[in-house]
Image (cartoon, rainbow, N blue to C red; front, side, top):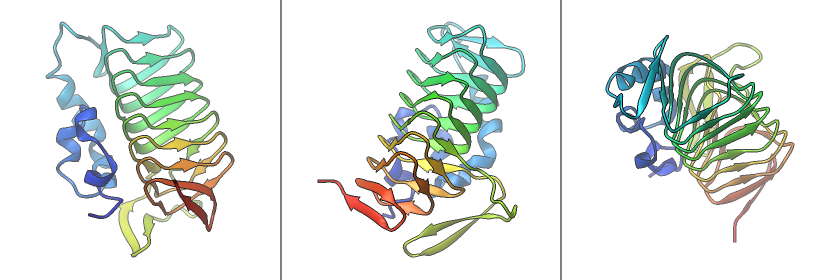
Length: 221
């Protein structure tokens, strides 16, 4: 199994997006369908557990949402999630159970698995973050190439065209991303890997690795 497939990257039981993701081989294949999937899923959620708001927004009654947070359309906020002050959830966002979306963090067209933390000044767009993935303060996904061409995933076995103009990053389960890091379009950080602070990441980072800088990746002991 390739390290960058859905089955290798994620524990699918740790997200309500399991029915969407298990349809595909690669995670980026699901990105264009996130918004439509959320609307269909939201309509099936228990009214005893979720409050339905305007613009296809469902918020778990056990979630904590700051009054200063903005929530756009096509959004699900999972049980016991925490949406902190001035979070900006633009839309098409599935926030998992016990996840944390912090101050001045912006989400757009994303799936956050359960217990994901994006707690301080993060931008996460057109991306999927696996179970217990964590992005340090100021770490962001860059989701559009500077020349506006279609994003490709650069694997050790060659490039894979995605057909997507907007595609940020994929973080596998229990990935740690250091503060101030930029994840370039099409970056895949495989499960249980760590990224040093202030890194510029592109391509596929193998599972169980420590990324220090481009060309310097160590295996965890």
